Length: 462
Image (cartoon, rainbow, N blue to C red; front, side, top):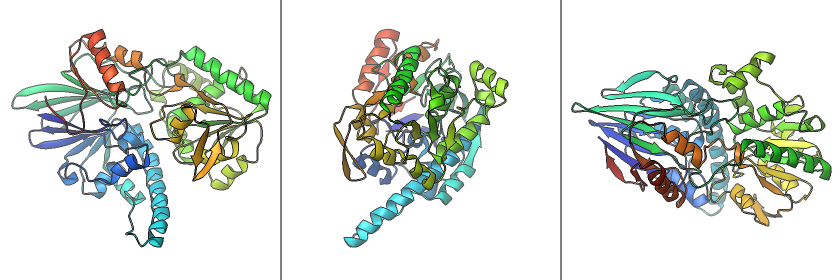
């Protein structure tokens, strides 16, 4: 049996690994590459395998950098099962349809430019129809249930605590009478985060594929994070501006609404209008509320008190573009939560255009910003940025609120690894270059485990 490392090796996005056992091929995730234009162009490169020869896909969760190329896989001929948590299946329909529509829109724009230059036209990576076919292939598997998905291949999902339905994947692999246990982390959430349970402890494994997004740093303490959010709200209120929150539609948006409801009075939010300006986040929020069995004790207790998840009283869902444009008429007192979370597309760009030059406004960055994205430029303190081809000075203060990340930090991931009673070999992936090496060395130093930092195309015998 053999494991080949493909995606999320040379870069942080595009998660995808190929497992070969007894003549069968299984993909662990199949995500989009995100970041700079030249990196996203890699999504159009052929797969290093024939999609028609893949027997099954195991999908850890719905974020697009883990799921976003599965419809392309289907378009290219894959028609096998995709195993994932039922909540991920529901969220994937929302996320992947949005991905398809955005890609179709971008291709229309690109083809207009190509027509003027007499260049060959391109087609979308995939369409909404491809997405529907993909979701129809998805088979839901709840946490804690063992299932043989192929002869000699049994899987079980455990809660990763990252977003709704996110899974740590246990795989028991048997070939020629020998059984090996592989664990694939997907993305690991923070301990003690709102709404979701902590990442599940897994005691046994021979090998672990582990993400390393925040492998070189620690998040701010939760209490400090909440104090900082409250201070930003007070500042913007005093200075007479708005607050822009670029947020991922799944996970971050729901957590923010939850916090705004709980701290509504304490943070003086009765003086603000809160806008969830994302059709995808609105639909994802509906799905979140349909899975109360996945909530932690605090969220369950609050839900039982009000018969639904708590929401801020002055919350507005803005579904269509006309409603979104009207928000930009508001000069003070608007908290605008909009995608994309890395500011590399979506409605947040239009709100930035209207507010980024205003020193009385504030930008609240609440999640990881990949290299090459506008969000990363803002975090790095750029004095000016280009938005839709136009140059804007950055006069609004930018605040990075690391404590809200859906990813666990260095300490969280070490804590999770300490749960193993065995001594697995750890393959460190899904991190920026340099970060993976730092985290790999730390695992060796702190836990005494053997580690590797695989490159794209590297293979390991299990």
